[in-house]
Image 1 (cartoon, rainbow over the protein chains, first blue to last red):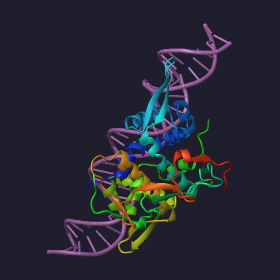
Image 2 (image 1 turned 135 degrees about the vertical axis):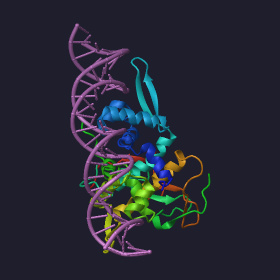
Image 3 (image 1 turned 30 degrees about the horizontal axis):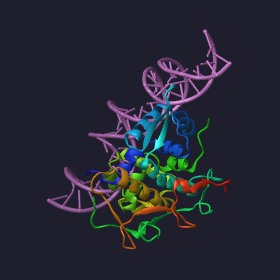
Length: 142
Length: 142
DNA sequence: AGGGTCGGTTTGGAAAACCAACTTAGGAGG
DNA sequence: CCTCCTAAGTTGGTTTTCCAAACCGACCCT
């Protein structure tokens, strides 16, 4: 049987390899240079170079030259890259709740003044999107 | 420099390897048996066996014997596993928006009657949690 | 000239993934 | 009884990927 076609699988083709999401985390933190990303993720330089190349090719990052002499580069988020913030955030929340032992390394404060507790909701009604509240719709639209 | 300690990195230690999230997707779909997961993900049997073992050890899945003669097993979600639904869902949404070409393989309908468009919001105020609306809180709590 | 920074690429060995075939433990059919 | 079948892995051998360390080129500082 052929494996299931699925947007999550497609997403993982792009950002599912090791270090990809950690590299993106660093860019979200404003660490946009190669050596910063190497240092903060712990990835080896060759693998990171390959991942960044792939993320640029996939349209998640853009390589931007900020100096001609010597040539120096920064990696910036595209719209697709910014949209991954949700994924990164939910992974962090899950890690906070179920993996990390002891004090949490990072806690976010939302602009409303409260410590962030993230929820995934339906945009139409604002109610939480739980597995039980979802059902496959009859037909997919393009 | 030592890599950054981070709950997202911790989360990826558990579910970040190839096939782990795809296996969980199948369990969310109700395909809880080894051969079903193999067939629907396309993973090789040995790698999948290793991933399932790891997910069980991490407390994301539970192995449940549903028949003594012959011995047969199913994998069921724990609370930690169910909590990963958010991650799986956001990855699917991102894939829908930025990777999948042509008609979407799966569209969800929320119990409110609308096609699901997922948003990540702050539980306190209900406003969307964007990168700009978040700032690191002064101190982490245990 | 010598050392340091930045952004990689190269190299060689270790680890992991992939694939097909095999195993184990029990049926089901003839 | 003999053969086939299913489920849930294991095993063995090959191919890929990963990793750490070294290297490179272009530039800057002293």
